[in-house]
Image 1 (cartoon, rainbow, N blue to C red):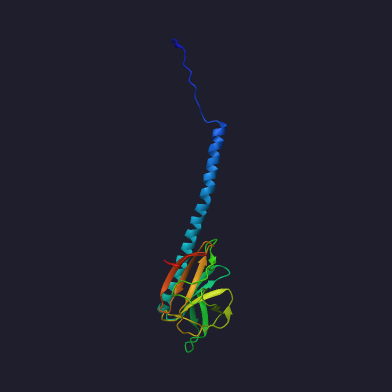
Image 2 (cartoon, rainbow, N blue to C red; image 1 turned 135 degrees about the vertical axis):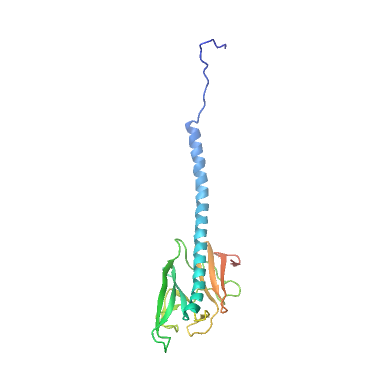
Amino acid sequence: MRIQPGMKAFRHQHGFGLIDLLVVLGLLGIISAMALPMVGSTSRGFRLKGDAQALSNMVSLAKMRAASVYSRTRLRADLANNSFRLEVWVPTNQANKTVGSWVIDGGDKRLSSGVRFGVASRTVPPDNTQNALGQSPLCSAQDSLGANAVADTACIVFNSRGIPVDGDGDPMGGNALYITDGSAVYGTTITATPLVRQWWANASTGAWIRQ
């Protein structure tokens, strides 16, 4: 058709219809549903790793603090409340330094949401660390010789030279603290030397990997 001068040419303009919009929204919903679990898993992994590093740092700090203040120190883990803290032994009798009390140094540190003390389904400890997988021994209440154990706790005790010791004050290897988010486990182990090491493993299978 020939367009005469003064006449307007009309063109059809195509846009998105209702069905097109519904298809796009459906695809976005599917993509979001697939992405959210991955984002959540990554976020949990970062929280677990951050808590593991904080726990390992606290163990190293307890070891150094013992030598600097020339007294016993310990990292005390509250397994029920998922928190941990540094404590220093303050004697009240200079002639008998087993008389005194544990004093909190720096306050409690809580594990992140979804992270707790535990080993998930693991049954074997990292190589050359412990005879049997498990948290460090129970903490004592107010004495430094290991009596009056407190339930749902775990303690790593260092003497005034920064050597991990047992309730009788003898050098002790095999200390460890483990945390998990259900999908993975991090462990901080301490030898009698003392050597502080950090480990990672899947919650149920596979080997421990040195971090």
